[in-house]
Image 1: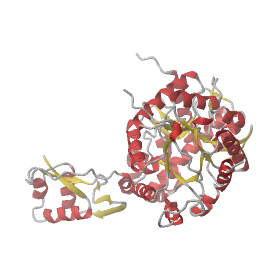
Image 2: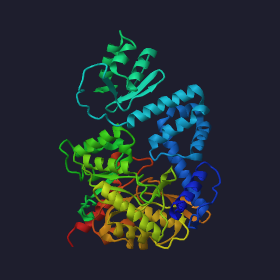
Image 3: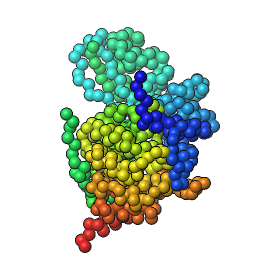
Image 4: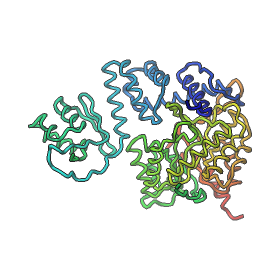
Length: 220
Length: 298
C-alpha cells in the first residue's frame, strides 16, 4: 500500500471545502487553515467558493445561453450544484460544458437535453483543432477509401454542427444523409457509404467536401 | 539528458502593456497603423499579454486574433492559469507541449503561470489556490518547475497569486517562498503588485517586506490591477477582480519594486467591465511614467 502523501491530502481537503462552499453547503472543515488578518478560515473558504461558482456559471451561461434562458436561474443553478457536488473533472472550461450536459440529460428531459447538446456542439466546434494535413490517398479504390471528417464535426440526431475556419456552421440532415455521414464518421469505406444511397451519395459527398465537413480521405 | 534552458535574464524589458481581450484586437492594430507604427502615442502599449487557455481552449477566433497580433509585430506574453504547478497530480504534459508550440507559433516573449494549484484528485476548481508554506512544498514545486521548463524548452515565469486562505503550519514567509522557488528552480518571477496587496490585506503581513524578499534579478515582469474591497467581521478584505484602473496603493508599491529592479515590463489586467482599448491603454500610462523616470539620465 502506498503511503498517503501529506501534501496531496492537504490540497484535497481544501478543495473539498471550497467545492462544498461553492454549492452553498457548509464545508466539512477538513482543511487545516490558519486565521488571516481580514479573513478567517471559514470566510476565506466561502469567498473562494463564491469565486469558483461565479467563474463556472459565467462560462456555462456563455456556452449554453438558450438553455440557461429556458431553465431560468433556479433550475440552471441546480445543474451547476450537481456538477459541483462531484466535480468538475476537467481543467478546461470548454470541457466543463460537456460535463454538465452529459450529467444533466436525465434531469432536462428530451427537448431541453437536445437543446443542451446542440449548444454544447456549437461551443465544442469552435475549440476543435484544425485538421491535420492529409497526404494524397495511396489508392482510389472506394472499397479501401475512408472519408476524413473535420475534427469539429458533431453529428446530432437530425443536424450536423462544424466549423470552417472561424465560422460556425450547422444544417439539418435527413435520415438517409445522417446515416451516410454517420457511417463515414465511423470509418466505413466509401463504397459502403455510397451503397447506403447509391443515387444520392455522390452528391452528398461533393456537398460535404465543399462545406468543409469532409477534409480528405485515407486508403486502408 | 535534460535540455538546456536559456537564461531568465534573456527576457527583454518591453515597456508597458495590457492583458488583451479579443474585442480589442482591431483597435490595437488600427492604432499601430498599417506599417506597425510607433507603439508609444499610437496604441499606447508596447506589448500585450494573452491568456494562453483563451487561445488553446476557447476557440479558433481567439487563435486567429492572436495570429493577427503576432503578424503585426506586437510582442506577445503568454500567461496561463491552469498549469497547476503546485498541484499533486502529474503535470499536464499535453498542455505544456501545446504551450511550447503556441509560443513558437506567435514568437512569444515569455510563458508564465501562477505559483498555485487548481485541482486535485481528478477534480478541478478553476481558481488559483495557495501553496502550503513548507519545505516539502518548496521541494515539490521546484521539481515540477524544472520538469515544466524542460518540456517548454524555455524558462517558466511564475506569478504570485492572490490568497484568501493560508494553510496552518506554514513557516516560510510568502515572499521568501516565491524567492526560494525561483532561485532553486532557476525560473523568472512575474510579480503581481496587486496580488501582494490582496494577500496581505486578507491574511496579514507587510507588503514592503513581501516584495523586498524577492531577488530583483529574478523579477522579469510586473502586473498591476485593481482589487475590490469587502467588509468582513475581522476588517476589510480584498478580492482580486481586476475591476478598474490600479489604485494609488498599487502604483506606490509598483514604484517601490521598480526602484529595486530597474525598468521592468508592466502589464495592466482589467477583466471586469473592461473599457474600450483607448481608455484601457491610458490606464497603464503611470507605469510608463515610472519606467521612463528610471531610464532618464540623472
